[in-house]
Image (cartoon, one colour):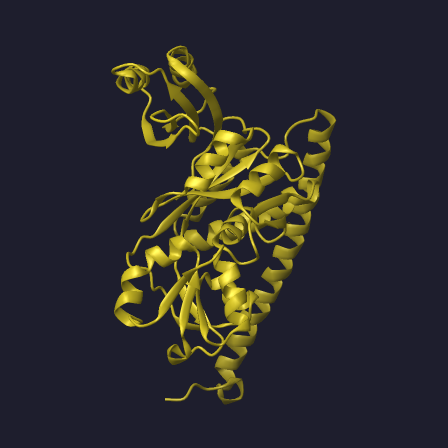
Amino acid sequence: MPKKNDQAITPVNKQALIKVRNRIDAIDQQLLSLLQERLGCAKKVGQIKSKDDMPKWDPKRERQIFESLHKANAGVFPEQSLDSIFQEIITTCRLSQKKVEVAYLGPEATFSNLAGVEHFGHSADFRPMETIEDVFIEIERDRVHYGIVPVENSIEGAVTSTLDSFMNYNVKICGELNLCISHHLVNQSGDINDIKKVISHSQPLAQCRQWLKKNLPEVKTQTVFSTALASMMAAEDPSLAAIASSMAVKSYHLHTVVKGLEDYSGNTTRFLLIGQSSPSRSGCDKTSLLVGLIDRPGALHNSLSILAKHDINLTRIESRPLKGEAGKYLFFLDMEGHMEDENIKAGCQQLKQVCSSYVWLGSYPRSKT
């Protein structure tokens, strides 16, 4: 049956509808007034912090806000939407104290850009970079406040260019974000029959390999610098299709051919937020190290035993070859806890004594997802 418009509603129901809508309008005005008041409070906080040269971002305070909201909400309002709304509010209020500049692997509409918006909201000043290494350079030279870089994917594993950059640049990890990745096949027309070549970054092509083999077996693929660059090329050439993010569809005025063509569900990329310094403990943190081991039997076992003796839970270990030194490796370690925690501090101090090289990459709030 066709839906009734407002004119077709009975007089009694129409009055009830008007009453509810009037109440919604009143609530909206209350929300706006409260948002304006919150913004004013945030500015005062910024002024107070500036007098004592305190950091503008307090991860422990933000975590407490979200925990309090979840408790008060009791599941009535969808939690994911609640987090998204308040993340935007909190970020906007924080940015009122000082505009945050964020470097990411560009151009616009890459998954790194999407992760940046997820973490900082839309109000930050996003700066696209040509390479992941460029993001590190911008941070080290203090030209932006933060950078956001991918570090590992649940299907394809480590992002080696990020790991290698940690070996070469003096930055600190400030936070992390796990972003669910959904790849879309996009082109000018939205018609799969127009596609002569599929282009994208190497990781999305790998993550969609089986789908492409099954559905476009005769179509060639080409690796390009980023998903956003692939989208730009597809916007100019009707024979090309890009594997890209949902953001790319809007940014480059493309049409979606197929949604969600990744081969495995649960495809997630972990992004790291990098900056000049790490935040203080939030109570739910991670610590990352970059260590080199002395070349002797049992060196790795002995190092891990030190962490175990201090009740430190190691969540990730990744090795990378030391450039120019065959057979030697550096190890990236992620562990639960903050360097301000007594067991982490003691364990890392002891670990440092048995390592040929030791770099604390940072302690930071764990991702909420």
